[in-house]
Length: 232
Image 1 (tube, rainbow, N blue to C red):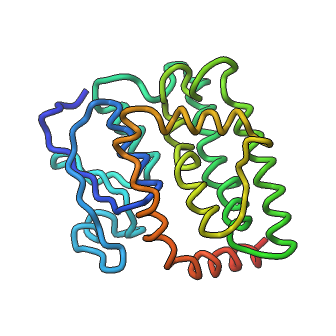
Image 2: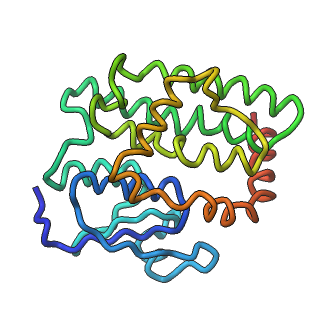
């Protein structure tokens, strides 16, 4: 295990669901300094430490090389610091958690984005696919337990956590409805439990501020979704 005394810095930005993932890793009890980045005017610090993608989040731990990509950072924090385990101890359970985290970011994330920001038949088809994918994810919740990680928030809860807070934000901006009590009651219950967690609440940005920050990006989101639709 690494020494807690070494400084930990997180390069992030306001209202980002992927930065939120890393912030929630404070469940390990790791103190860190948050450096807020302006993505419209990227700093030399960000470009130096993430020259490949030039995106947040980036974790700086002592004088080690920078660590990029939200879920990679979460795994690093889990392995490098003492505290409650975020990843399952069982190898099969770890592999399963990684699979569903990847499924969320790739298959489900793509259909969800198109369901939010396209229109017509493309939107309807993507909405059907998204709801099917959400049903598959919902089925991974252990029966009778509060979280995907069991009785405590774990890696997969963190990977999926943006659904709990940001899904409603994107739905309000776009006018779409994808996650409802009627169709996914268990997932909605999990979302409430996740947001109610004391540590998670410290990392959730104000909803109204997030909407105000993301609303000007609506046209950009629409153009990205249309480009995705043409590639299908």
